[in-house]
Image (cartoon, rainbow, N blue to C red; front, side, top):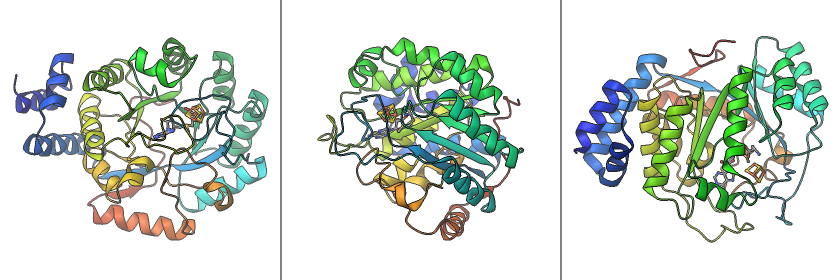
Length: 349
Ligand code: SAM
Ligand code: SF4
């Protein structure tokens, strides 16, 4: 086997075997990494040109009933500062986002039982009645089929639920009492209902091997998500994984590029976590095939409270200034901000 041949095969066929992916991860060097990124960038350009889609992120709640070992919002983190946004506050965020030209609103939060199906339906309908053409993405964790269906029928378009790790043992070791099958089933339900479903994983979870990452890449190839969120694990001091190193920028970028080649049309964010570990993280993510950025629209007063990991890139500038600044940075990197909804071309509702 040869790394260059594997990259060219990925580029030409959008496919590779488990063995080839493992060989690539184990043996990639500076030169071959450059080629991988070049090919990923070319592939993105084929379908999306230089466009970078903006999604306005609204962090609904920092309450969570789950206990994921890595996350600062976990139930057992007694130091977490908890908040919930009201419907009025959410609508304020949405209006602010619309003024800035964002056509997708991402409602994300911990698994908070306060946000019942009825409450979510009310929120989704209120947003859609004011902004019928804009897309709503939900990211509220695991819920029942009926719950996902009610929110979809109310007007939600997309749902992000990272699989986090496709290695059953690793997944279950960081999600106490939570079987991987449950996560897989939620993802299947989302797709069956008609959502543009987003999967994704963390790179550099303590104990994760290249074999585990190959499982993630194979899972993504098989599931064919409309979106795929890939970011480095970053420790949070008040969690059981707080003393571990964060995942590397380089490995995350390699995984982004491979996913772009495996799924050429996938919507691939250059995540906040990437920017949080390196000031050049976002640009590196875009270069490797990323085509989505999720600026924060949450009220300034709660941003620090949505603390998933230490040193999160809190954007403390005013949002309009941030919008100008980010557009400038995107343009400088050779890309352009795209203000349309940015659906995955394969998944029209
Ligand atoms: N509760 C929902 C869920 O888990 O899908 C949505 C919110 S959750 C905070 C969103 C994502 O944050 C998760 O999918 C996870 O990958 C990421 N995340 C949480 N803690 C993290 C950490 N310490 N490092 C990197 N990413 C983290
Ligand atoms: Fe809760 Fe999501 Fe954090 Fe897990 S990752 S503790 S489900 S907010």
